[in-house]
Length: 253
Image 1 (cartoon, rainbow, N blue to C red):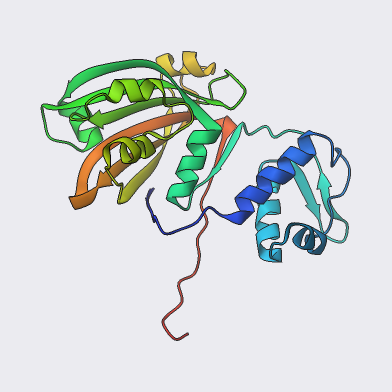
Image 2: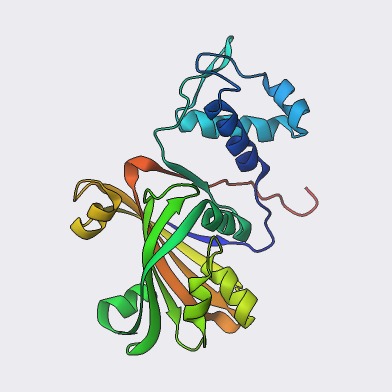
């Protein structure tokens, strides 16, 4: 699966509402077994359309937090979701939100000259030089690894190691824009179902060979220059990935 992310798109309201409702369920505002307010009530309470509310509820139902019963309502089924992290991506802003919610804990930074299979994976020339950044992504307020991360930054950014040391919850592509003026024009993304290898399984605390979801991204600056590439690997049973599709309307329709 390959997707392209548009800079012009805005972070979806339904994802914000879903996070808010999930937090309200977790802190006991809506106890397990209770009914949520109706779609109309939630729409009025949060100043959002019923379509937005419906999509937020659908996400939480998919995560196992809610059970929607025709003629009864929407009942809270669990306080916390068995899915560790849910990610909906429709924009650059969503990727930045991902970096804030799953902070990168850098474990290793080294210079590499890539060739062969790795060059093909990154999509770069043979024998080109890159800075490799390895680490884990952890939810805010936790040290439990939610994903293994491996990122390659094109050579030629002086002082980049110092900036990485102060990365905190900023996405690396945002850092490159802020510190070096490299405006990202396009992001290409591929999603692969994989069997997690022994090394990454040990980090993620799952059995070797268990199913995983690997998301590969390539970041292009002006002129189609590839300046950043990498992947994150999530345990398949602990990650939910959502994409929203909108119908395109013909001009004048």
